[in-house]
Image 1: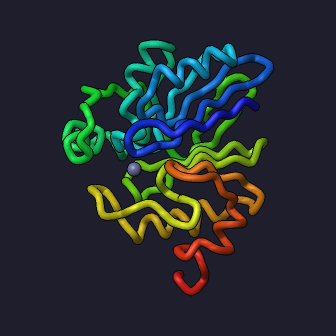
Image 2: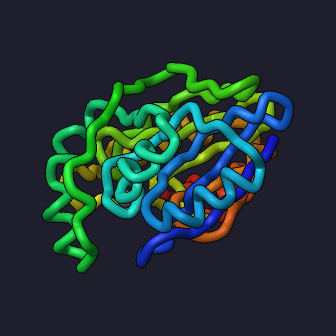
Image 3: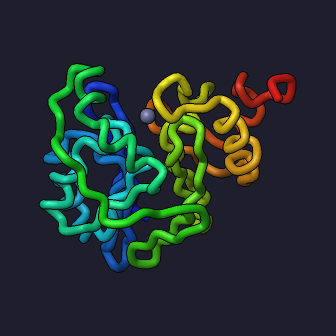
Length: 212
Ligand SMILES: [Zn+2]
């Protein structure tokens, strides 16, 4: 599997460019910004992008989606529980002093247990509300990779003080869904360094038993 992670935009959102080495079909997860650089990586690997997946409707994750769709023709997918939040993208741009990307059109919603495919690549959608109502993680069972959005970080978890956030829900998502994955799963968080489920289960202060 081709998998490049690049931090994009002022908040350094981790954008994943993922491709099937044999068919050269691929997907991009969270194209928040720097679309020219994302396209350069896509072209370098000769990928045809089939899916643009947004883990949640915060501007740093969705900001470049329309530009990428225009360049690749791939559909943009997001969980419908974040459609309301997406309407606030102008306000979000104001909060962080970013230029608004304008209206973002979602092609269709994806929810719990849906499959997102590109070539032989197959990701399962895990609906993990808490950072936002419509937050999803993408799990690639064959490769044991979790693209976690802002639900889980190395040593931390997503903030729950923004609109649609809930500490109760993010804990449920983490304990019932994310920690159900095998320890050897590589985690690509929405920001910051990569980690593993085992590492976070052992050392993440938000996930240790005393915090339950
Ligand atoms: Zn976020």
